[in-house]
Image 1 (tube, one colour):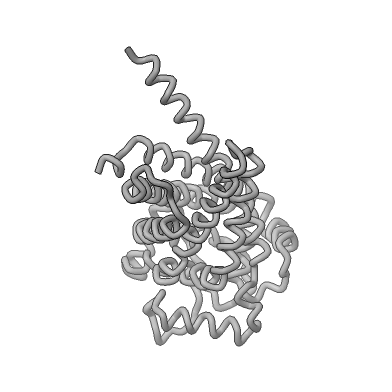
Image 2: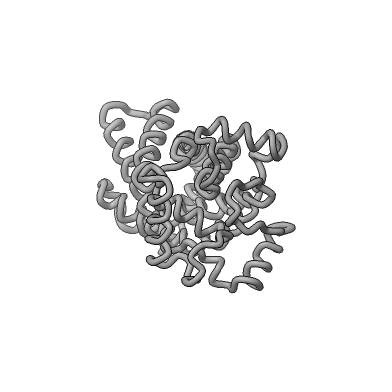
Length: 307
């Protein structure tokens, strides 16, 4: 219990949250482009820069940053929960021994499940807010009119029921393999580098963070597309089955995507997603490692000065 409630776990959680917020803010327009390509399937522009230019031309210069606050709020909560759970479970299981790739994968998976169950409502709301006011090419999308985060929660519960806040939970649970794979490769690559050198440089952390996220993103991208569509929940699709997030809906959406656009339709927006997530993850891990290291140095200095 002491390991779970330790100050060390709190430091890792805060550093992870700060790192993710910093990285997402820097690369936020790339995430906007990715989401438009996933949800608005009739958009003809396929490259990231062309989509961003279209958004700026049609909706204004600040449009790529629409929904920044709810996304950052959700990301802060999500990464705090994930990093706290990951490091707490790792401390309990490893207990001073050397960690292994298998243990990192299992711990990452469990941390991901906890994170999904607790934070999915935040991601449903921020997806709606981020796409509000967008000029869609797809006439099947029903527009929303929310005044903010609280109003979005209120309207979704009132009009769609409280279960709608967990739209996309099933694919999200499948997608816990994404951060689990990411952390497995990140921790594994870090261990290999530390065998050859005493300390990792900023460039080392940036590169292994980027590689780990690129692998995880490419493997799980089709399910991420389904997750975005279900979280948005404003398509006039499959009305006979209202159980959003069920296996039947997931298979239906995957089948529709392949039928309309071929197998590559499952990877529409992958370029923007790779640019955004790889760069974001790399910067996040860099800030995370530097912040935790600096905090622990300060803690040790303070402890030394105590009588």
